[in-house]
Length: 322
Image (cartoon, rainbow, N blue to C red; front, side, top):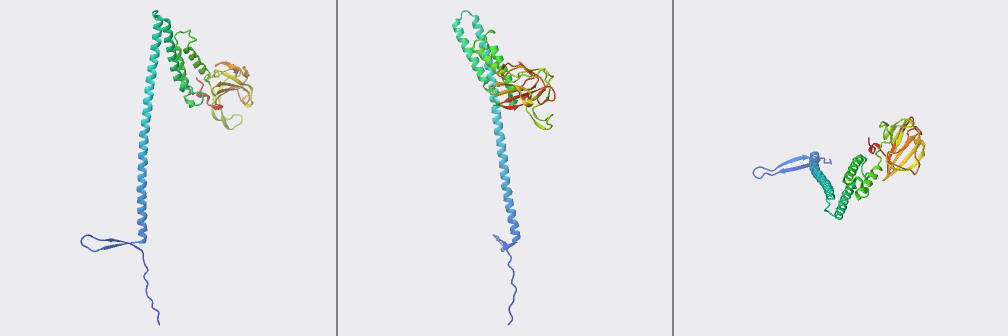
């Protein structure tokens, strides 16, 4: 008996879409092969992802615009406050000058009792001292490392302006006992303790602060100070008043002087040919403390000068004035 054999049709996978019209016409069927179904699905997924990415990008752009607007408003507010502060200071300065003139006039009028004049003088002095104390709040941080070194010279200029104001506010040239005179001494002492004085007569330098090729070690190393030109025996001056904490030989520095100025400031004077001060000695600003030399690791006569703030070397050009 013969076995029955027939053809078995292979089943193919389709995606069928049926179109049913509302009016006339029969039902229409559209078949899409399996691979096309995958292709359409992938395309749809990519389209959705693109739309989501576009939406997110637009949202980020909008947030950035909002932040720019907000920062601009904050900056304008700060500028406005600064202008108001400047106006207030100008007004207070004028009031101080007017009050000084009034006091001078009052002293010349003998009908006013000395007791009333003394009372008004005390009120005037209190007002001057309060004004100066308020103005020095920000300046008072320059020697504690609270500000960037680049603003140091600006603060020193403001300090000098305050000293000039106090000097002009005194009621007499020979005043040395009033609150204003004592405040002037306090400000001058503070200024004298800042390392702003150039320690040698020449203004020529040949090796600045930062990385450099060492002339002896023949490799790049950090240079913690400023090398100032000079001839052997030239005078070396203290950059600020303070106490000598070291005076002697110190390895590569050669003959070295270290002066502590308080408020975290120290200055170093190295390679000296001669030391003219002793440890523990108090020196004043611009006082001659030594002589230029080439001791220690030095190839020629010069002064190696350092300014250290809170024991960390900083660029001396931030502090010393031309």
